Image (cartoon, rainbow, N blue to C red; front, side, top):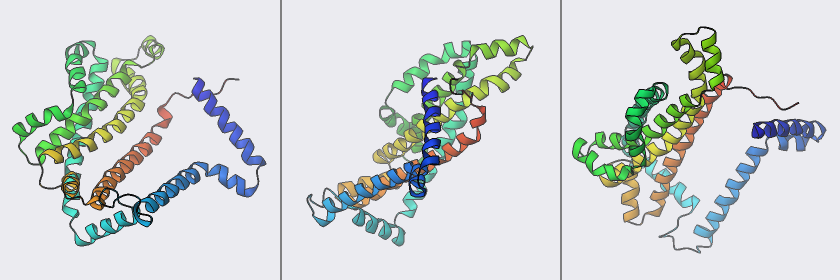
Length: 284
C-alpha cells in the first residue's frame, strides 16, 4: 500500500515538473528511463572496448571486446554455422517451456483451490523444487536418452516448479473478504473461481512465467553442456574449451537476447490483464 501511494505521488510530482520545465527538459523527464539506460549501456560497451581491444589491458584469450564479438557473430550467421544450433536450442526451449506452462498453471491452481490436493502433493512439490536440477540430469538422460527429449525434460523440470508454486500461492492469497462477499450473493464455485480467484491469481502466474523463462534457459545450457551434439549451449562449451572467447560471448548474447524478448512478451501480456488488478488510489 505504501509503495503504491509513493508511486502515485511520484507520478504527480513528475507531471508538475514536466509542466514547469523547458521543452528539452520535458523531453528528458519523459524519456528519463530510456536515456539513462541507453547511456549506461554505451558507457559500459565503450569501457569494455577500450579494455579488451584498444588498450588490450587483458589477454584477448580471456577477454574479448564488443567489436570482436560483433565480428564473430556476423561470421557465424553469414557462414550458417550457428543456424542449426539456434534451431536445436529453440526447439528444446520452446517445448520445455510450453509443457511447463500447460502442466504448471492448472496443477498449481488445483493445489491452491483444493486443500486435499495440496496436502497430498505439497511435500513432493517442495522437495522437487529444492532439488538441484543438475542432480536429476543423469537420470533424465538414462530415461530419455541423449537426444532432444532429455533436454526438453530438464528444461521442463527447471521451469515447471516456479510456475506451479506461483500459481498455487496466487490462489491461496485471494482476498478472503472477496470470497465471502461472492458466496453471500449466492455465487457458485465456478463463478467464484472465474470472477474472483482467477483475476487475483493472474499476476502471480505471470511472475511465475518470468521466473520460468530464466530457469528454462538455464536448463537449455545445462542440458547441452552434459549431453549434446548441437545447440547454443554446446557451441559455448566447445568454444570455451578451445579458447574462442568471441564465440562464447556470441552464445551468451543469444541467451540474453532470448530472455529479454521473452520478458518483453510477458510484459505485454501482463499489460493486457492490467485491468484485472485491484486498483488502489493515493491516500486523500
